[in-house]
Length: 158
Image (tube, rainbow, N blue to C red; front, side):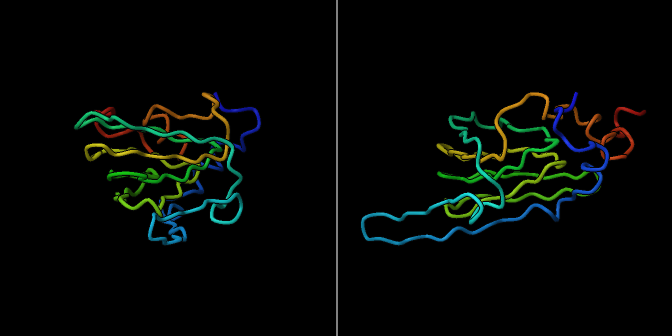
């Protein structure tokens, strides 16, 4: 079920691709007693911030994410340590390594994302354009492919 205020899911999901995801470097204000980086709505972020959450204490070998959104955009930052984010539009996949607290990955709606390869002590900060709404999530990869107008995953069609 999609959110009631979501655009047509087939149109929205079929139009986005991994090239719409990009690294954004934030300005670092260097000081001898510690650096500062600010994130402002509509300035550094191309959306209005409505939710912030962070992931930490991820066990070695674990993956996080493994979903897509109908409407929510996210800006994902490695505040500490490093991890990889694999983005997938149903045609192509690309893996970004995040390891700098002044850089983040913009992930647009209609992109499947998975976070993996967390270093020990890493902290992932996510800034989101929408409040949490379970109906905004696509959590089944084969359903994601159908929404993108693709065939079901090869291993499930045999």
